[in-house]
Image 1 (spheres, rainbow, N blue to C red):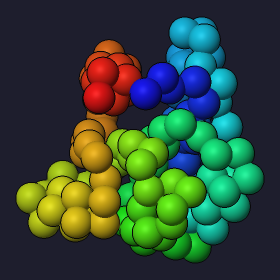
Image 2 (image 1 turned 180 degrees about the vertical axis):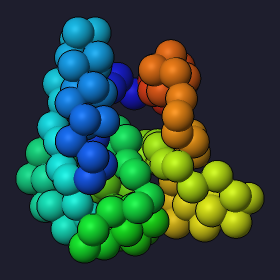
Image 3 (image 1 turned 90 degrees about the horizontal axis):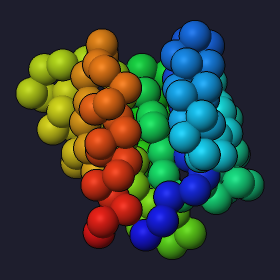
Image 4 (image 1 turned 30 degrees about the horizontal axis):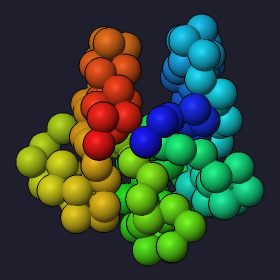
Length: 123
């Protein structure tokens, strides 16, 4: 799978801007959403190849967004990276049970996110 378009979802504008800038500098197309409801709308409209999704979001939390995306035939195969400050084993388990393909805790180095994206391209 070749990842070209990525949906970044976080309610912190600074995180979205940072990831957008870094990913675009590497040639990815980036679309952004700031809450769970907007994330679903953008995902179904833009059909990104992968998502970077925070768990703590207004509207719908990231786990519910992931669950809904993974339950839809149009998005079920698209990798989801949860990028969150929630770091307990229970938090990780809930995200993986919702369908997340990876779980990265903040703060993290951009290289960790990029490495995870690249790993999906080798599947």
